Image (cartoon, rainbow, N blue to C red; front, side, top):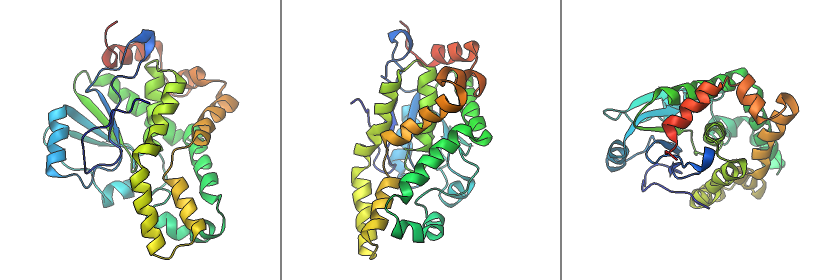
Length: 263
């Protein structure tokens, strides 16, 4: 599966979306859309890479508390925009979440799976989350040149959710979008292994560690939760874009003009 990883060592799950095939067999332009995880530990070399790559805007989908505790780097010429996808603070698997849900994570090996499905469902129906996607699409429509990077913590769930609607609007088929979402599993394999070893060394039991692996994994079931929720409550994806995300034919065509190569 196409993944187009960026040569960045100090940011997690950094990928170029250019090259995916969209409407009328036109490919997404290179140097226009990037998706990543946390940028807060970027080296000077990697910051320069983003600048040289043409990044002009960074959209941070993390909660306010995450953005404050692990802020995006300030890079000359790059605008940082914070638009949390969820109104909740923190992230599943984060420090506050581990404290709140410690009993569940230690006793129920399926706790994280259910929580993740619930979160994906909430992203679809929550007014706050819907508005975030609308804002992201608006920013894209107003950015005539340069690269937009959007990210969360692992570049997987919140980033994957927003990527779904960007790519679908550009005419990328759902199976290709699904496979791009699932690429995170291979990209994050070493990250998950290191995280698991840390928990093992801390004496955490296998049930807890199983839950942590789920929280750091992409899943067909999570992706399908989005599609099923949309089908159950909003009829279909096209109706959701039109009636909920306010994607008019004019906005759709504008985005395709800006982000797809000429035929």
